[in-house]
Image (cartoon, rainbow, N blue to C red; front, side, top):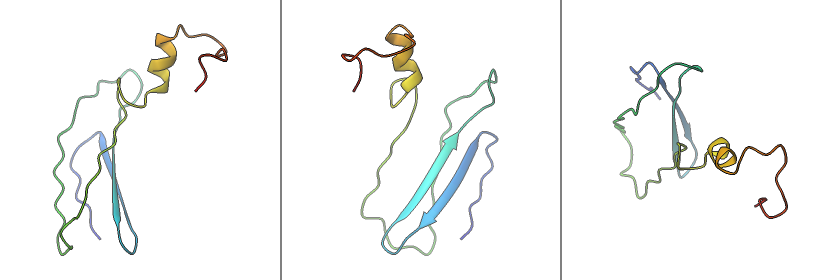
Amino acid sequence: MWVKATHVTVDTRVVCAESDTTILFTNFALPRHPIETALLKVTLNNAVAPLQATILHIDQEHANAIHRWQNMGEHEYLSAAERP
């Protein structure tokens, strides 16, 4: 397996199992360094045509615990009503 990556802030990991393949992309920057949205192209060579694809992401609106905590008022401890 070979992964060609040419973006300075995007990292790629590929995990293959018997019936599925997981491709994980992370777009990261060091603290106080700029980061931008990255457009990615995935090409699977010598592979069976995918039956399904799922995209999950973490950003300001999705799965961002710090952003949610800041919007709740940055309390040191959550109240019973604030806990999931």
